[in-house]
Amino acid sequence: MFELILANEPTVRLSAFLGIFVLMAVAETMRPRRKRLHTRLRRWTSNLGVVVLNTLAVRFIFPVAAVGVAVLAEKNGWGLFNALAWPLWVKVILAVAILDLVIYLQHVLVHAVPALWRLHRMHHADLDYDVTTGARFHPIEIIFSMVIKLTVVSALGAPPVAVIVFEVLLNATAMFNHANFHLPVCIDRWLRLIVVTPDMHRVHHSIVVQETNSNFGFNLPWWDRIFGTYRDQPAAGHDDMTIGIEQFRTEADLRLDQMLIQPFREGTGEYALQRDDNENP
Image 1 (spheres, rainbow, N blue to C red):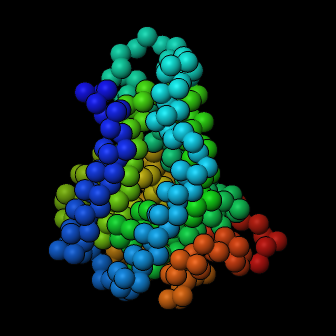
Image 2: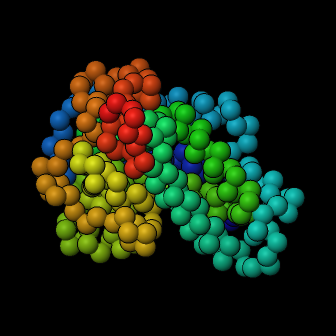
Image 3: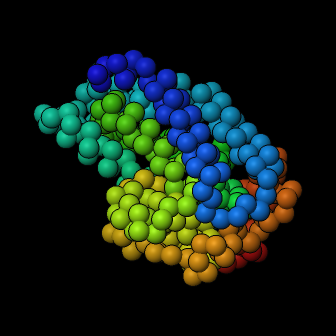
């Protein structure tokens, strides 16, 4: 079975992406959590446009993706797990958990370093919150993230199937927890014990600085609780909270060209954890 998944890795990932995307888009339409302030046409054109650019950038810059690096590491005995005679299922579980922790720490990092926050804030500058927000990242940040991922996969010696499982889970949960989908409170309360839910992650997209710098997890919800970055609910409530950041709040800022030049516009504002006080906000 693992060999079949590896042999069809691009198909597996694309099928999972499209399936979850369509499911979340339908769920948002049938049971929305918040009123939409901007049309899908206005936002989705740019948000999905940057997905295309990111895909092309990764394909052009990195001849081998994360799964390819995992295969090379396995063949050459690179990395920690390839030196350990543990059962495959143990390595898969540990590798997925460790990779998810790395994503959490990377997310904290891009909020902490002003130069990296300039890249990451494009994700936060979306004026609505839905399934496409989960894929709205600046191409330079995607490249930075890919370098970290390839480094960790090779150093860890993560099994190729673990990398595929992680990639599929991360993409699926990113779309799920960014979805404008209403989950009953009783379900959300229990579900967020095992996965990051839309209500949990939406707090992270609040315009309020203290709320933006909380709930960094994308997949597993435990890291925020362990490291003290968990916030249960937004102060204004989910219906009345404002999505986005202070600097970019016009219709023009939703255009793809304006999204791409955001890192080079204005100061870091109040959001970067280690803001340069000599820089104009």
